[in-house]
Length: 258
Image (spheres, rainbow, N blue to C red):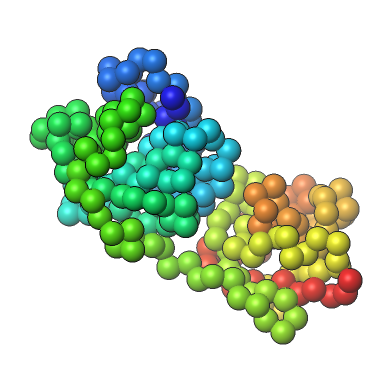
């Protein structure tokens, strides 16, 4: 069985290795896969997006352990969520909100039997709660054994608005910025196949293209990324640095013609 790990811990310290050691102590036969440990510190929004885009590519039963936890040690809940094709173990702070449509059940992690310690560190729940719970879950412990059932509607959602149809296209927002500086919107790209389209940011309009090679070096363009969302990119450059836009910026995609 697979356990994936995603954190904002980076790789300079031993934190990630310690989480893997905790998992191996419980079940050394589990396969661990690092999704990323380069989430910007405390950036729940970025982690939400990375989990959402990674989830479809793993086998049924995969357990995703996600630890981006600015409120570690506080009264925020630790939860495990059963999905249609696996599980996620994480703090209840919005990390799971991108895949809640796939959720079928959830519990708060109140059964300390499955924690590493009855008295966990106030600053490293990734080691003492989330990793061991993920390992037990991947080893076959039923979800209901891990704690008290909670209403799926009570799980915290990040305030990212839905994309909405307009007279000429779709209006959405930037929901993520990747390593290359591409500005990834929450506008589904499927609407724009086989038609001419453009992206409007404030008063500026950028043509939609199929590939980077369709544009001149340094040109800002619209693209449909491999994740399926409309994004704004710069050929051989960094769109975020050039445009100086952040998550939440309003974007409009306009269908020009068939």
